[in-house]
Image (tube, rainbow, N blue to C red; front, side, top):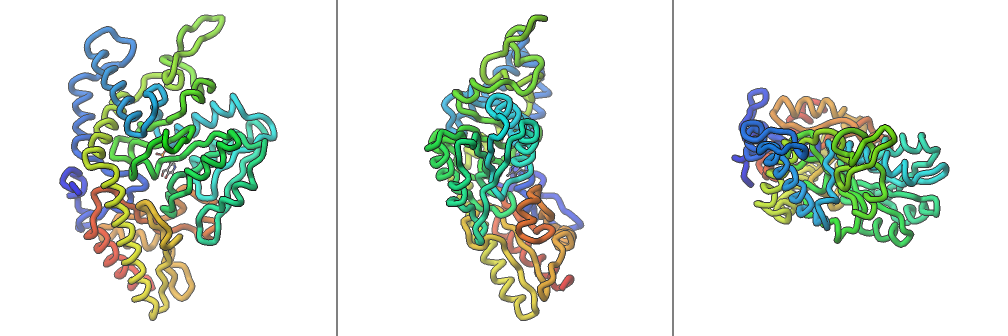
Length: 412
Ligand code: PLP
């Protein structure tokens, strides 16, 4: 797919052509997104919503068009349900604070899962500490999929919210969020989906999914950094108090007190990132011009091909006492593969593998991937992670496998 649209892919690293396989951390940007940022600052930069002058009206229109584009992209009923944030982390913190203020009391329980990113753990821990509530997590089966029977056992009248990742940023596994939402709704418990690793890679329809909240980041979906989204069903957002105070989120401010703005502005204190929202809109247009189903199919093909090549590599290396271990092997995955290399049972540190791959121009991520509880459960200090974007191709995977083999021969 359209590699030429991404200028950075022509870069060389340590004298080698760049092979970028760190898309779960952040994606590269197509030229249209970079052009959008330049266009905004060159032609219509102006603070939005409060200005009567021409530039302010143009900037306001672009920001609100972006909100509508996001709403359409995820199938929201209305653009009022789209709150612009800085990213997934910001969205989840906003929700934890606001929902916590309104609905969490001492002894209440919130449920996440064993595969969460820290940004879907720590805000809830902070809330639980503040309110003397309890954070529980859905455990894993041995095959590293979520144990849904155990999840059912965690539910009680104390459960006030469930927040789970759609796709694990470590394992790439696709969590059964439809089932979780159905089970939760039978008990009238709202569900938040961390869509950081799903929204960039597959079509999401929040109404079909019936999630109550959805959080995601612009920079992981070919858009700029510093812009993200918290979607919430209108009936929930109306019940929640603002999480931050300042300009824009108010209706009237008097010394006697303040009344708040309507949705979604009551959650958007201060000057919003209107250049970011415009660039995100162009990123969405770009993805839609390819088609989300085509992106999903392409990345599924890459994931299956890569797992197959890694299996072959494991077979090749077996006789030399080397194991290439893929986590959650052969589970359906969304563009993310984590692995480790063991030499006669000893772990080769993922950092060493990542460093030698980098020397060969291959960008992967190593470490705990901001999911320490899961990494602890895997019983290792970290993993090596490859993750795909729409511009990757099989040649990238071939280059990665060749470099991995060289790396193994050096280290083992
Ligand atoms: N949730 C998941 C599953 C992620 O993979 C990430 C980032 O890697 C985040 C949340 C946090 O996203 P951000 O750093 O853009 O806020």
